[in-house]
Image (cartoon, rainbow, N blue to C red; front, side):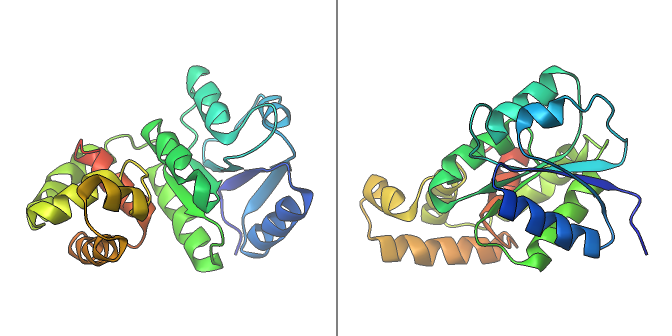
Length: 203
């Protein structure tokens, strides 16, 4: 059964664009794909129930710049950014600028669909963070002081080895703390942690 939502795909890599479009189409979404941010911005009419998936790294205008331009134009289109491992700090900036989610390559189909459901459920609903902030703070209160230090650094997009250096502990110890705090926070991935940090005013 087709979804009412439209998913816009913006990626300069033709193979990725076609593959993602085919999967979303097979999953029942209406899909419109564009090779660049400029081509997408030329589309002057956006449906109310829609979501944008964009690569964070693109020539001319990257995914973060596209998101900022949409915001400048008054658009509330929920945005999911796709990032490589080295681009996580940039993806965190995108979330701070309002992106709903970021997906680290390689991601699986289920993660993509979960992210889409999240983005579409938040379309037009800007009160989500306020409603969940108290719950996030309750979870943060269960962290040990060291876990909280790791959390605050993780949600800024810093890699484990950088966190280890700043806290004068080993990368393996960072991994252990990170695993424990993700369990306590009920976080599936880094994007979940960043979202929680933003909701609670952390990071």
